[in-house]
Length: 291
Image (cartoon, rainbow, N blue to C red; front, top):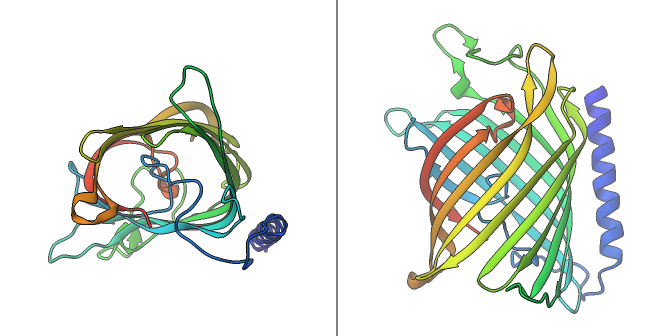
């Protein structure tokens, strides 16, 4: 009942914020959904709502992401918008006979507001300031790929909690950016106002850079400071830097402007909620679609 109460409270807050935000949007009609969002997706952030298929190179895992951000309404000047975020991030095992049992999956939904305005900063190659604030709920789960059918038991491995356990977080996230048509730098902060398990440090931050290079290619880096779980203390203490470095190419030459071929190197705390206590390091190569 306590979990239901917290989830209901989060939904009420999200709904109220969306209604308040939409009240300030003057576009006609009031709702005009578009994937062409004011605040463009962060290229290298593995927690960005997106469509992606990214096989791991060292292990028989596959990341499968399904989701997107949508601006429900933009004002007449197209410098303020209100929208929604929906996403799933899945970690699949690559089995035989083209089978992909799901090891772990995260679900996210929330609302957002974004804005942008032109700026002129002497000496810096940026002409636009933009930002996005999100209120979101995320939950995570182990699935059939984490269950041993021969012993009829969950695979405990190094998990410090008895499986299954509940993972749920509600948070507010703010990201601001300076950009030009070719480059972008950004910084962000996230505050958790409710977590299960508890004992999680509510503060984390991120920063990143995106650089366009010749031939529709680009380089991008996303860095986060994430709290470290200490099993002996049953809470987090200290932080660990978490990197995702990405080199990619947009397939503009064949008419697929929203499709990117990417190579990624990830090192830091796992993005999967069920593994939030575990550091990981891996490389992926695959496709990302920005709707």
